[in-house]
Image (cartoon, rainbow over all chains, first blue to last red; front, side, top):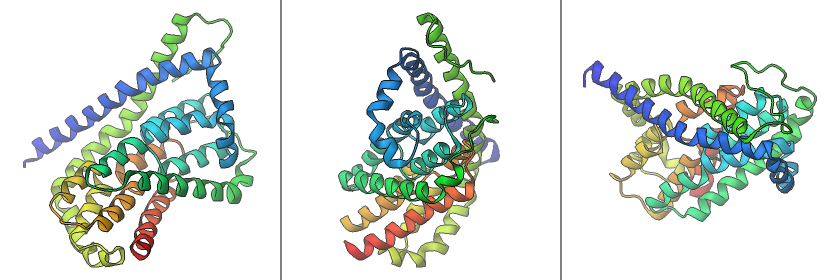
Length: 157
Length: 149
C-alpha cells in the first residue's frame, strides 16, 4: 500500500461517514425545528420528565438524550452542541448527558451488530442502559452541585 | 455561525423548514470538521502495524477476561477503528458463547475511541474523562462477567 492510496482511502472513508451523517442530521434537524416551533418538544420533554429527574438533568436534555441513545453518539452530540449554543443546556446537563451517552449510545445498531456474531441482544442492551443510568446518577450526586449554577453562555466552536 | 433563537409565535412553516435545514447543514459541517481528520488518522493507523503490535503486547492480559490471546486484536481493532473492524476479526476466531458475550459487552462500552472521543470533546467534556469512563467500564465489565457467568 503506498501513501497515496492510504490517504485516498482515508478521504473516501471520511467523506462516506460525513455523507451518512448528513443524510440523518439534516432531516433530524428539520424535524426538530418543526417539533420545537409547534411546541411538540415541550410535550415530549414533559412525557420524559421521569427520566430527566432520575438522571438529574433538565427537561431540555431529554431530546438529545433520546437521539443519542437511539441514533448514536455523533447525532446526540450534534443536537447537544446546537442546544448548548442556543443556551438551552446548563453545564451540568451537558456533562451528565455526555457521560450517559459515552457509556450508552446507538443501542439499536450496536446491539444488532453483536447479535450477528451470536451475542444475546437483550442482555447487552439491558446491561448497557443500567450501567449508564447508575454512572450518571452517581456523577449527578457527586459533582452535580458544583455545576448546578454555572450556565454556558458562550459556547465556542 | 449564528443560529437564530426559535421564536415560535410568528414563523411560517417555510421559515421553520429553512431554519431546520440550515442547522442541519451547520451541524453536519461541525461534525465533518472532526470526522474527516480522524478518518485520515485511523486509516493511516490501520496500515502502520501499530494496532497489531499493541494486540501482541496485550495478548497475555486477555486471561483476566477469560479470552484467548488472539482476542486482543478484536478489542484493539474495535477500540482503534470501529465495531465493524472488530467483527471482521471475530470471524477468524473460535469463541464460546460466554466469550462472545464478554467481547460484545466490552466493545459496546468502549469502541471507535478516536472518532467518538473527538466528537464528545466538541461538546466541551475532557478527553481524559471520556476515555477513563469507557475503558474502565469495558475492563471492569470484562473481569466481572468472566467471574460470574
